[in-house]
Length: 169
Image (cartoon, one colour):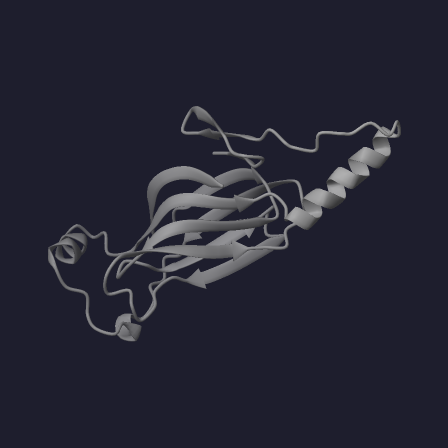
């Protein structure tokens, strides 16, 4: 599912997400301005750091980045931070060029994270089947139980259906 968060983070800035799920990722633009991102969930119970700068980051491109998986099912709070340290641009296949890169450097915006979408998976199909089976057993009367979920996400003051996933920004 997608949770729009159309923003950029400058160094040492953070974004917080309240969500229900077992996996968390993001959709971002990776380019010469990419850096190290740290994601902490539930006060550091789960934590990862990813270097988003790779040899092809001399130009901007869309990328899906898996931050954490195997989270326990249920509600979580994630904090995503762009670290102040910058990766070594020597890994780039060639130096970045062009008017957009020149403008980024001129304006001091050559180090940022493009946070386009949070990607959340609440649970796998297997986990969903187990929960549904447990719910049916708990019902006890042999009646069929509708095991679908009606998740909702609040995005920038709006509410949208998320097809079974829920996130609050």
